[in-house]
Figure 1 (cartoon, rainbow, N blue to C red):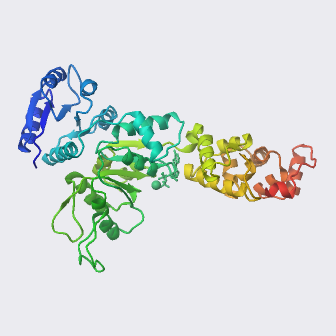
Figure 2 (figure 1 turned 90 degrees about the vertical axis):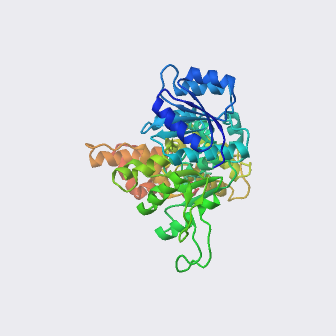
Figure 3 (figure 1 turned 180 degrees about the vertical axis):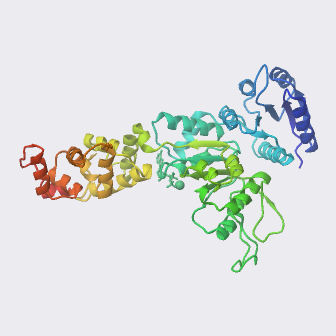
Length: 469
Ligand SMILES: Nc1ncnc2c1ncn2[C@@H]1O[C@H](COP(=O)(O)OP(=O)(O)OP(=O)(O)O)[C@@H](O)[C@H]1O
Ligand SMILES: [Mg+2]
């Protein structure tokens, strides 16, 4: 490898310093050493460097403090942090602060080689190596990937993404179905200022093992029956870009071993191929399953989990982002009505905010699309979308209601029934026809029950037409 980078190594441990020094010299780089942060800053004032590799834990000035100090003066200088095995939090913190990458102790020759070749590619292809500022990502997110949110935990998450987008570290995105994992993966790609390749996605659950292997790594002509032509896999397609490995827990164990090798060596073997092919791909994996349980049960390799989970991202469920429900609904409704519908009426807002959205943003998006269609059924839109256009699906209605009722052990069946009836009436704004329909009982039975509870029975049952509206 023709690197010849000028590297400053900062470490208080003489053994680590010399191990690193030997490796990078072997790779053709010039090395300067500093035993602590202050010394490092002095050396940086005197000489230009292409890269700083610094230990995280040092006396006097720790790695984080040094990183901050460097970025105050040398914004574009990549800093790589060395962290101890198992201290993922530290590494993530360093990435958040704008470290270019990190390596974990103990590291191999290949780890350093891979790192330097990435830095080298980057300095050749793009001389600006600074991490993009918040404003830039917000702008990018508006231009290419629209992420609508007003929720604090989401804003924090977007901030982390700003900082880590341009690094090559793997990202594991966890979150329930429909929370926006793929959208975040795309944002990671579009906010990465160093990419030269495309965003490519593979769903690990969609294919049986042998097909998935050839999908990922490609195959040589004649390597198996049906392989009539050499085919490039997704890794090669994504070279220089981002590879999304969707539903990663569904990857069979034997393929997990192969994937681990690829992540370590940064090269792939086509099925039936005879020589490895180098690839530079940023891996983003997603899952909506409890990953750690898969690891505990032995269904997912622990070492691969750590490799992928370098930057962990958890997307909160929509029901935990109450601030976002109305905002997103308005956004979708406006979009689907092409700007015709601009408001949601208050009853509707209350209803959607009370619902627990098990399908998260995808479910909300679909509900909005359906509601917009229904609201225009009579021809033309009104400016305000009303509750009657939402939740036309029985299943959705029932779950809306279920989410509002707290059933506790110790409650009698009769009391449970009463509670359910009153909650249903509340949710239907006292429309008895609608309530009876939801409860799966006749209006007569509902009326009798209410009579039993001492409720005055009057004629407020909804008419056929408001029931269907
Ligand atoms: N914050 C958001 N702003 C706007 N649209 C969003 C937002 N989050 C998600 N969406 C939209 O919701 C839909 C679902 O998102 P996405 O496909 O990214 O979810 P996912 O977590 O990958 O789901 P699954 O687990 O089912 O694969 C997409 O159409 C996406 O564009
Ligand atoms: Mg997805």
